Length: 148
Image 1 (tube, rainbow, N blue to C red):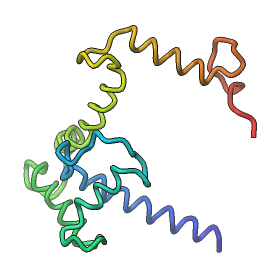
Image 2 (cartoon, one colour):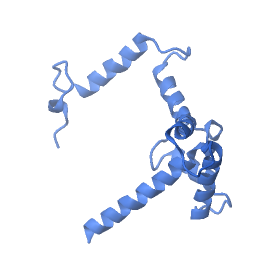
Image 3 (tube, rainbow, N blue to C red):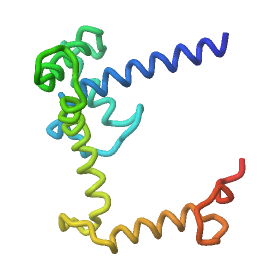
């Protein structure tokens, strides 16, 4: 019984995640993608849910999610065949992932000059090793994992 509940929950989350991923271009940068709060409990997920809620009742219907999906297909299905080719999906993915890419760029560009220098990358590498190399051997390896 417990295994069935876990599998059912995983399936529901997978379907919901896929629907949000297809519909996400509707939000875009104007929706505030650069704010912190990623993940299922974070600000981005809530922001997307608010954007999809067309009637503003605080709940999502299948019809609301499908409307956002239909909008994505209208914009990216260039040949109008009702399916996305890899090239068509590339446009969708570029629009969908650009805000996150810009956010990551800004994280690396610590001085905000619009350029990522080797020194800025090195600083992040240094922090990664300071955090992850728990046995101080100069390598990141399974031996560095925390014991439970």
